[in-house]
Length: 134
Image (cartoon, rainbow, N blue to C red; front, side, top):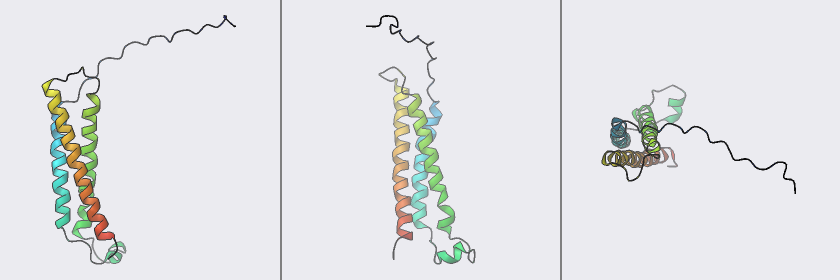
């Protein structure tokens, strides 16, 4: 047995400063952006689609209203998910049970995530239906 090299404990690093939770308005924005994303994806259902996609891709005809509007709910859903995940992630080191204000922020963040996921399902279903076989 070699006792020359005993295992040494890992040096304790300085404790990191406590994390600051996201501001309350950020959770509020996440919930409302989720709702606006859902509304935008429903509006996408109502917009007229393209009649001649080949001509649109060849720039012989202008893009349809649905094609020009499609990026709006897509990017809104990404921003909504990002903001809501930031709110939830910064809350993870808070002592439990959470204060009432933090519980409300968590509910708002989850509402934004759920509404955004429903919107994602809608606009991808619309895209698959319009592009799919006819």
